[in-house]
Image 1 (cartoon, rainbow, N blue to C red):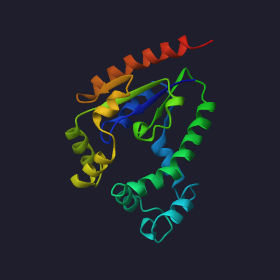
Image 2 (image 1 turned 135 degrees about the horizontal axis):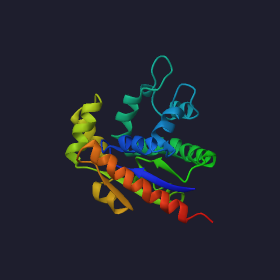
Image 3 (image 1 turned 180 degrees about the vertical axis):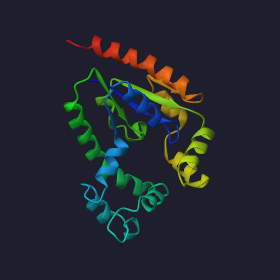
Length: 202
């Protein structure tokens, strides 16, 4: 199956873009949602996280305190790598299983840390980067969450730079204008991906 990896920094608009492609009938796999499922109360990764990290990341009811874990991994590189070692192989396995079940010309895989993890390139035919300014990333993230500016900046600093992300892009969606503009650009890319998928058929 022809696959497109969708990535971008925090607050760039990845979810909006993914929703626009989904509205066109494109099957979308969101690795962030898979990570949430893996760390849910009955999730496959929760016990290993509990064993690896201090008790502060667990609430009294046995659920994961995501805010506490986020503060730890974005302030400690070693802790972040431990979490990635727990989650990323499981996420990758789930992505592969879902791709096998799809019957569509192409699929989109939302991978926020595509460049950082470097673990999906063999699965992808194209990389689509959603781009905007760092100021817009900070403003949008603060508006949609309860994170402070300092917390958002810490997340940005833990991610690769805008330039590094753009360097791996086959396609770029600039999300700095209106939703209608973005919708039009998505529609154009959708037709391009459909054509590419058909051309790859035996």
